[in-house]
Length: 404
Image 1 (tube, helix red, strand yellow):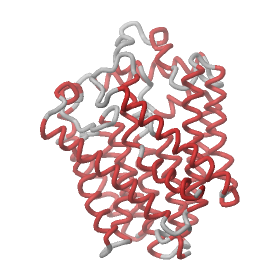
Image 2: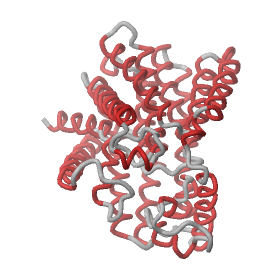
Image 3: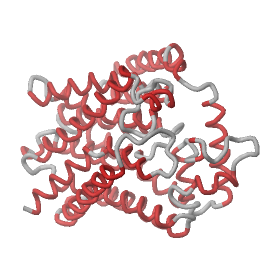
Image 4: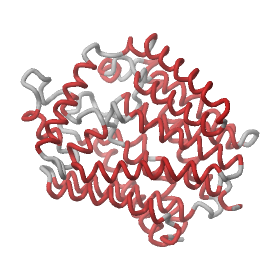
């Protein structure tokens, strides 16, 4: 019974990503009307808390399945976030975020611990694919109907669905499409393979409708990484063609759906983020506390504190520096570097199907790593923590984990 609870909680953790945006119902001054009522958001938060309890239980029960080196660096991120929270300007919020990150780390290790149990992999992938498909369909419907009107106007006709903004939606779709496309390739001819193909097509349409300029570049680099890893001889040609196509779409289409002042606003956010870090270099101002100091750190002619630019520095490494300092950035960089080195080494000696699925997930993580250089999506940590577990599991056991 406890193991079933842990597996169900694990599936829920992978299905929850599109629902994080519903927590805007708790924001004091959201730029647009929340998609759900505060009561529904409280219910979603309660289910998420229950799922986190389940994966913590699972991680403890299967603790011998953890890869030691990656375990150390993932927990270092949690520790750095707690440290920044305790020493920062908004400890309750920071501690809450650190606890959520801890739950995601528990999901990472629970996946590795239970992956070889019969039914675990299908449950996780179906939950992940189903929630992403629903989010993509909602986002496409919103664009077609131009509803809600305030959301459509605020985002300049860009797809956002239940997420906080189009760039966050694009970042999620980068790893989502890595999982869906990889599963579609290795499970061709099966029911789950057909479902994954459908999810890839619909998710691809939704991604195009985000009109994310840097997202297109990140997607091109992710596809290039996959091509080079799977087919080293032809990969460079595929990579060059993909990157050129992404740039062409960027210039010809995506740029028409952006506020002209976006580029200026981002540079202002970077300046404020750098100034914040220079004042608090070691442990930062605390997780999600950037907006509290933005009125002081911004340039005199910069947008005011009630604009979206005030919420974060619009660059994840800079956000980590500003909010958790050098301690937090060191933990994250080493974690990312460990994954980028260990996953290819693990996948290259694996069977063909394992390798294809693992490198497709790897490409999604690479794309997110590129995307976060110009964006600071709130779900980036969760995507990295949980999808790296899927990539490690795929490289080691493939999709049919119970048969390994």
